[in-house]
Length: 30
Image 1 (cartoon, rainbow, N blue to C red):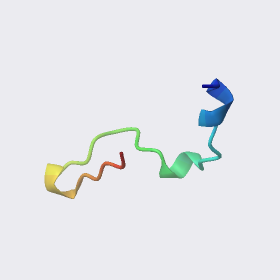
Image 2 (cartoon, rainbow, N blue to C red; image 1 turned 180 degrees about the horizontal axis):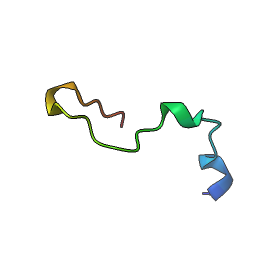
Image 3 (tube, one colour; image 1 turned 90 degrees about the horizontal axis):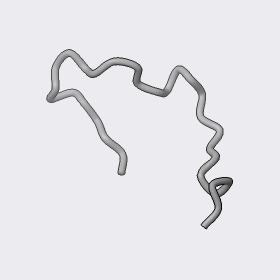
Image 4 (cartoon, helix red, strand yellow; image 1 turned 30 degrees about the vertical axis):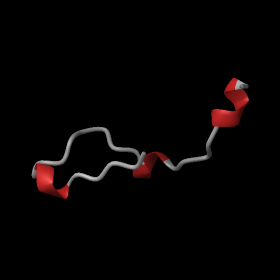
């Protein structure tokens, strides 16, 4: 397995920096 397989082009504005205030609104992609 190569580390380069895990390089994704994701816009910074789509990355969560802080948890959602209401945990019911939180989303997790696995």
